[in-house]
Length: 182
Image (cartoon, rainbow, N blue to C red):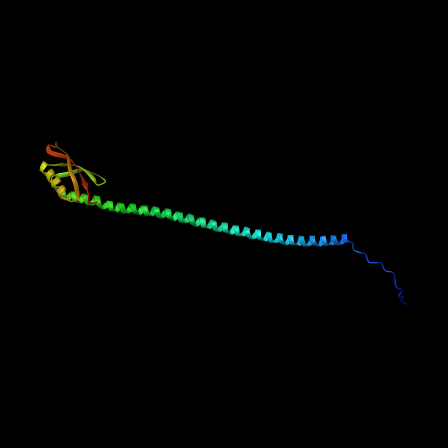
């Protein structure tokens, strides 16, 4: 059989919590809450630092791509300047190309029979000619033809010397004029 004791037993009185113990428990709770708050704040700051680092990296990548584009634009501008210069040179050559051809064509039309050219030098529309003529009258006719043409200005006979070539009397001459038809 089972015996049950129904006699009241003496209980120990509950321990009284002292004021010091209460303050220690309260301090522990406050420390726990402060620790949790600091941990939460630390996690938030870490997330913010990582977000700022990612933002900085993306902006630096964007800056590098813009610098590459700027460099490409500078290269394109330099190439465009070079091409423009080359086109200008080609246009100038085209314009200069017609001038000497036209000048030689007009000179050949102006040359009377018996007058020859031995040298022709052109420097910026100033033309120096050396040649030979059979008679002084042929040379005068050549000079008059040049003066009558509007493309030739300031025609000057610099020198006319009578010489003998292979037993024939000839006149060597030097003249200068400006060609305005270029």
